[in-house]
Amino acid sequence: MEHDERKTRLIRSTAAVAGPTLVSRVLGYVRDLLQAYYLGTGTSADAFIIAYTIPNLFRRLTGEGAMTPAFVPTFTELKGGPDRQRLWRFGNVFFWDLALVMAVTTAVGIFFAPNLVKVIAYGFGDVAGKWGLTIFMTRVMFPYLFFISLAALASGILNSFGRFFIPASTPILFNIVIIAAVTGWARDAREPALVFAAAVVIGGVLQLALQIPFLWKEGMRFTFGLSFRDSTVRRVGRLMVPGIFGSSVYLINFALSRMIASGLEEGSASALYYASRIEELTLGLFSIALAAALLPAFSEHVAARDIGELKKTLGFSLKLTAVVSFPAAAGLMAINAPIMRTLFERGQFGRGSTAVSASCLLFFALGLPFVSGVKVVAPAFFSLKDTRTPVAIGIVVVLVNIAGSLLLMGPLRVSGLALALSLSQGLNFVLLLVWLGRKIGPIETARWAVPALKAAAAAALMGAALRLAWPLLHVDGAAFVVRAAALAGAILAGIIIYILLLRLVSPADLKSVVGHLRRAASKESS
Image (cartoon, rainbow, N blue to C red; front, side):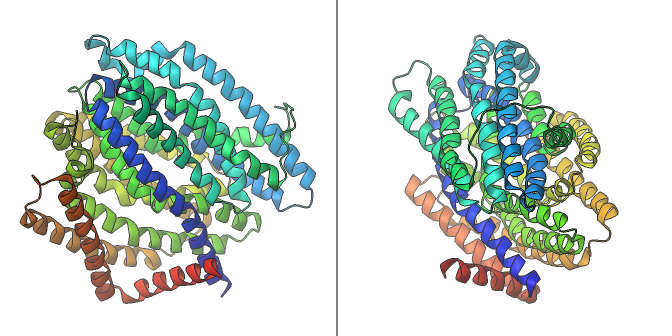
């Protein structure tokens, strides 16, 4: 009964993240729509995307990638103790230590921006003006790293107290700022990409500012003090160093894919970006939300020395992830081109842009269940304060991705990079799962793998039905409203077909998931 209560609480926490994340992703689509309209997949788009990638990659490596997985388990452990003064002394010191480190990193990044661009976008030097524009926008956007890293720390603290809604809502502000800025100034700007770049920094400031009052309410007073010698700070630092690589394998691989794409046809880096945005939209609706809720949950199990409960939570989460991610992947594969055409094809984003982006989306969709699975398994290592194992596995995965990219880019061009990324994530998931089993003991694979296979079978049949039915609608050349209505109808039909098929092949698992969802909803409303 207690385990069922924990499942329900996990779903409620996931829902608290998923709700604002859904709003954020919708606004993110509007942001990307404006970006596609004003920048398309040409020189300015490639320059902005690579320039944004550099500080954003650093942010994800040092923020959500390394800092949050290292900080949250340690903070959660202290929170369970009797000494609240020690808890907030650590929280304050770590905040100011991180602020100093990020300020120095930002200054260094601005100074060495030309070198970073030459490494990450080595192919841009062949296009006149492209390199200079990318370097300038990289310098404009690097301060975003400072604010968003502190915002990630604030989110980790609030999540440790069971507050998920506010941290998950901060990207909404980020997207609103960019949409407002672009709507107001991009049309008359000589270089619209610069409007996007400036808005990114302002959005980062607001993401931090929104959370400060809630941190104050919990007890944090932001008393200035630096102490890199504090034992708890040093412990988190030791966990962060390997975590910078181990927890961000997918991000590193994606950055490498963009770097390779910069040497292919113009617009290749942009095509990868737009396809990845659709994948992230799908991930954000559930997998990213679940991962945010899992790290504090796993950390509580470890702090209580209850590995058995950790295994149960892990197995339930993997089953839940499979039930959601397989139909999402099948849907993206079935109607990848209609999705890209409906969402982005207008302005500078033409038929050619749609074709190459849709091809990338097809191959990204193949890896969606594995990316989702990694987001469930990786937090288990971090809760155990093991950031070294993901590093060892990550090195292998990165090497496989590079080799696969070089092999597949010849016949498939930029689409081959997307396929290599998906295949490497499949390897990442399998290796993490195997090593976690060796670390904590058998995970009872059959309890989640069998439902996952049934979900995959139902999703495959649903995807085949959508693929066959879409051409019969004859809406590809119709007005946007007609295409959007047809796409929404196809998605709804796919969900209904999948649920009916899942009810046929796996009724017990469907009943279990629905039951937990109902209990979570009833407790939320009570």
